[in-house]
Amino acid sequence: MLGPTQTAHAAAPGDPVVLPVRDALQALPVQDEDRTGYERTRFRTGSTPDRDGCHTCNEVLLAEAPTAPTLDPNCTLTDGSWYSPYDDTAFTTARSLDIDHLVPLAGSWDSGASTWAPAERQAYANDLDDPRALIAVPATSNRSKADQDPTTCPPAKSYRCTYATDWIAIKTRWNLTVDPAEQAALTEVLDGCPTTVLEVTRAR
Image (cartoon, rainbow, N blue to C red; front, side):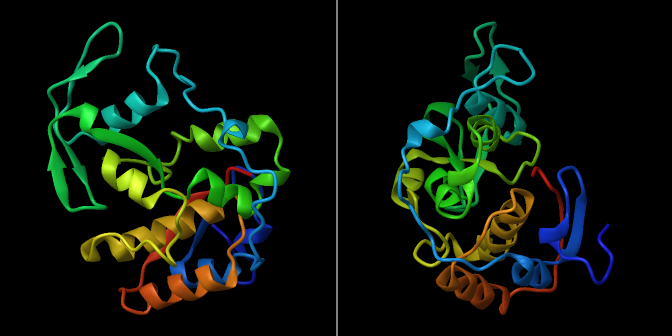
């Protein structure tokens, strides 16, 4: 746990960060975004870290299913159920869902990932170690959200406090920056939320 005078930005990879979420937001460096040079192909997706043959997308679907799906030897999912907090809607067909990066790949590039090594970007794109990083949502919602951040894409009202907290957690985990408008939008959301303690392990 960080001491009272330490900041999340000062933590090292592998360190736990435990802070009130408003303090964690204030600890994030503020910097204008820069999308120069961004291409989605700079983030390699689809790794199978546990070597069971499942794509990262299916790993997320398996982890997030309230009702476990049936998994065949080719890692095809059938049956099962899922809930998308983006839309406050339940689903029973895996094919209806996409896997969204809560903080989009482009957004991570804008706020620091442009300087990372390719292996770090791959790790970010396939982050299964923090369940907040990747989320199963309807394909329509994922495409509508696209590369937007909390300034332009608020989710379902019932999810906004969790969304803001999780956004800050992922930015803290990966030592990313926020821009002034993003910081202001997150602050506004948190002003209507109960006090929450953020817990996250630094990835870099």
